[in-house]
Image 1 (cartoon, rainbow, N blue to C red):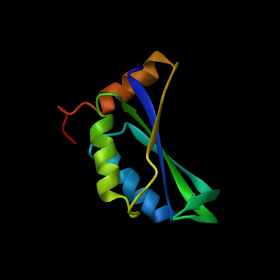
Image 2: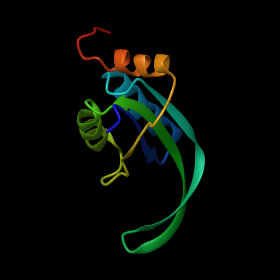
Image 3: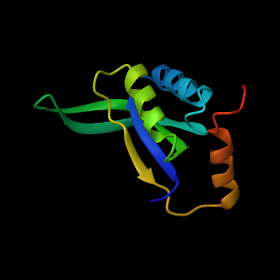
Image 4: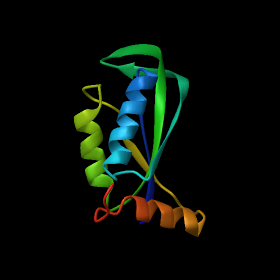
Length: 110
């Protein structure tokens, strides 16, 4: 299992995405957040076929910090049942991985 993950979720508005990103990065659960949008989503939800506009968050973290990140996202997300998905980062620049590790270390202040 890889030590690094990219986690995604989405929100209805840009401001919700920014607020959620600030909360997870501020809590050192993610090294950084990229907000992409608006994106068009086509989906099944509550038994109905739908289409909507969303703002996607892409977050970088470690496998060790993922459980706390997931819990934080589920607690603070504006939706009752948000999508939260993580995929392993199979390869990348060593300095990038070091930045992720350093950024989510819990023994730092700020």
